[in-house]
Image (cartoon, rainbow over all chains, first blue to last red; front, side, top):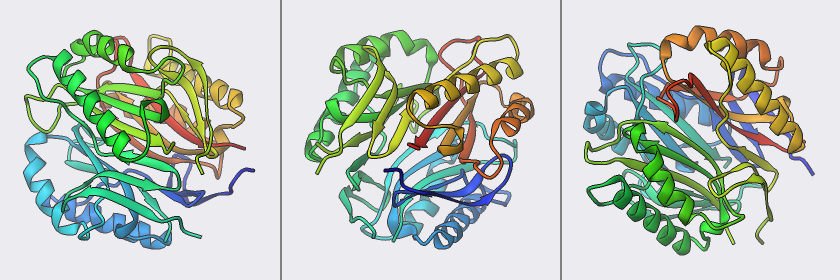
Amino acid sequence: MSAPIERHDTTARMSKIVQHNGVIYLCGQVGAGDTITEQTQDCLARVDALLEQAGSSREHILQATIWLADMSDFAAMNAVWDAWVPAGHAPARACGEAKLARTALKVEVIVTAAVK
Amino acid sequence: MSAPIERHDTTARMSKIVQHNGVIYLCGQVGAGDTITEQTQDCLARVDALLEQAGSSREHILQATIWLADMSDFAAMNAVWDAWVPAGHAPARACGEAKLARTALKVEVIVTAAVK
Amino acid sequence: MSAPIERHDTTARMSKIVQHNGVIYLCGQVGAGDTITEQTQDCLARVDALLEQAGSSREHILQATIWLADMSDFAAMNAVWDAWVPAGHAPARACGEAKLARTALKVEVIVTAAVK
């Protein structure tokens, strides 16, 4: 009774997309740029692209976990986030402070979504 | 073949409850109070209220992620947590240190649960 | 229409394994040892054992969240991780820095997997 697992953009370390039983798991997304605004915008654009590739969309996000390297970026990240979230479709969300894989990185977003 | 998504208490930023395919995702819950004991108690009371609203209960939690702003609060948080968890129904759990959205916040709990 | 919840190795605090609707949630796994290499190896051996107990395997991991107490251990953790992941079956992954429950702990891995 096992549902199949679909993986996309798979390396030795991770898959960018994993789909199972109608649920899509994205690997943690970061963004290019010098500021928290730029990085959040680029990060969420990458989320959009992966969700489209997976047959989903930002209207279908179930849960998002946001890590900020410095919680003083909370308001600036939220400004980009709030404008990006489609009205009526906001996911469950949590945000905590965690240093990321490279010191230049200010934000990482982990998304679980439903297929369309 | 997509299951419907139900969202409750939805703002421009997040939904407090998202339900999909028999699984409930709650937004990260924090609590009021000055001490880790008070905040954990209030946080878990809010989890109870949201799970009841979603047609679930603390007996149906699948996974809980706990963030403590200061890991030295681990024992005091656990004292409240262990008393709250129903015998035989403890979820998978992980606990790490992460500063939270406001400096006064000492604990945040992220819950995934099953519908009853 | 609720799917049953199966719990294994359940204490007053947590279950090591929770299964629901074809998805397995493991509690955060840490490892014994003095170095990040030893701890990562032992941690992933424990993941293997729990997944086998749950009727799954490392080929069936959907999502992994890795917490490092010190991000300077990133490369050494990845060396063990990359060798452990089965070719073509890498999960969605995210890695952030978070102090763990005991100061000796260097790595914790949180796994969600599919049943076979």
